[in-house]
Image (cartoon, rainbow, N blue to C red; front, side, top):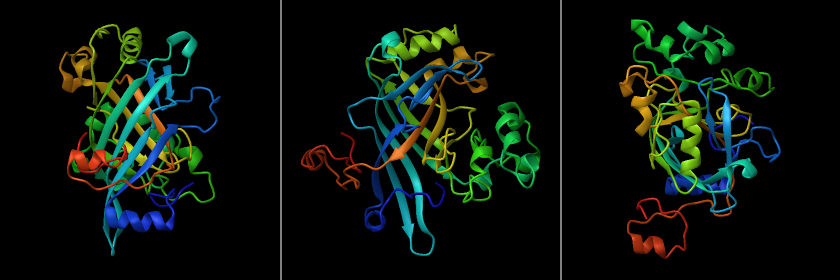
Length: 303
């Protein structure tokens, strides 16, 4: 499906969203068929951006996706942030074990496709050439963009755009309703982290696999994107796609040793958004109030 930004919500849920400003959904592997080759929520990749270890949703805890919005009657619902919180395990349990890797990330500072250099008429043409966007809009090309395009951002990623554009109800362009995020904060942790980091080391030998942290960093990478019809870079399902490194590794990944010169990445998140049994979060301001909710998400307090 295509359409507006929150097609998974019922009319009643949309009305509640307008009042509360927040909604809880869930995240799953990018394809509903668990046997799909290379299916995952998170994946390690090598220098050629090929998958080396797929991580799928753990049976528990619930993998949650929270959306914060603004609502104005004149302009409608505007997404201002998306947060994900959950756990993944190796798809190949026999080879890599079943230790959980916990994922927490918040995406904010939004942009539209009209702010994206790769989607601009100067680069993509008119109508946009999706293959050119996906294959030719590298960071090197982006960093050498014309003076008049200096304010434009490094987006979108268009891996699935050509296929999505063939659908009867595809918008023009296919990323018309996607939301892009300039800001990302978050981390990976848990007993699965050594497996994740060892797999990074297999492809990027200068990385120290013994570092016991991974702070999500998207320096010099395409912006994270959220929406339907290809935003997760895998299929038409509504979802999120992001490409990242561990901040702890930037100097080792950089050809100059300067973290600001990094041009590769070690992992992707490609997820599908699905409904949850409990849809709306509860607005609270103190930890005791949150405890009384029995584990439901609390919007205004960190637990």
